[in-house]
Image (cartoon, rainbow over all chains, first blue to last red):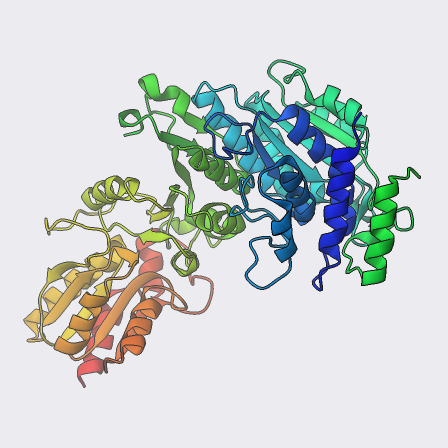
Length: 269
Length: 293
């Protein structure tokens, strides 16, 4: 496993959170290995041709993880990382939710519950096109409280869209706290299975496990796949890991130095 | 029509409209996605973003209210060529009641950037607007009724964005949208002609983009405008006409015949509800006479 990509992405994320506007820190840090694995090992994409016709599609349905996506896209070479310096500045292309004007961003998201219906549409189009393109949708766990997710999950199961893959960033937290104390999601695997999906559960910070779960799609012919990735909100910053207050953070200069140092050490809790 | 172009996809939300349709080789491009309108609109956006042209079928009120956020963010914001075919517009659901009436959809849809809003007044116009709408680069909202309505006498072609002139006149202009409002306008104009009142009639089948030129002509060449629609007064055709009059600074009184600010009064069939809620020749006549008083 190569941690350099993830470390670099985290460095870029905390730098963006040091902007006066701040950013969605916790849920971007929990996403890093998921996105790094997708962009480096799974997605059939070319950073030089972000609109190539037969590319795989990645939709960040938990749009508040945008700075995580921007960081990984920059790190993967879709655009120079220096461009991220404009994040939070007036008229920047790097908005707090994914902006399709950024190379590599497929669709704007941010209102939760939109990504999976879009993904079903992309997957149906690929099937009509007789293309082997796949569609990956990254969801938050709190997002699963939106009913439209389950409308789409039901439709994907019924349509047997086995090139559609959902990845749930299961960091266990939403703004108010523990998902299970807010509106509980468990037994989450059983719920997806009940909608006709094949379920894989992994450590969402282990790129080897993620890579295995996201390879050889479909795992079950005729069934869409969901990867439940257990993650830690704020991952990489031991002093706020697993805390709901990491959701949106504006780092001071000192806070940024401390965060950057923690990321560069790459400490595991 | 779906069979004519590989890009066309028919998305159904279990409306039952297609149970007798034989799709032939286009069968794989008919998809019944069940009773789930938010998902329906998101799926349509994903298909359109992939190069398809989806025709999405649901009822007007479900498209405009239940699925609104998906229409706004997934379809309108991305300016995607999705054609929302919305049946049961206005009061056409009749005795099905307020759950199935749609008296808000024109206001909501015309508010959305990039959206074209079409309301054909009869069968032939429906066909020409569906075909013309299919060619547009962005999204289209097509408001239809539930059952068949009478064909209009005029054979003047229906072109998107151009009001159809059904009758010329010098006293007052009636501007109507939708089958019965347009029919009511024509019938009322005929009656008023007998009383020596010369009334012009415009079929405003395109609510957005609105034919501003036709409104300016009406405002400057006649003494007032009466709008007629199957919609709440707030935000519908009458509102948009009044906005044009105000924005362009033309001095002209505008009176609106529309459903009052309440859930539709009465119960019963379509035509009964229209009359019961004031979408009638009597109301139009009264407004014309007040304008000329």
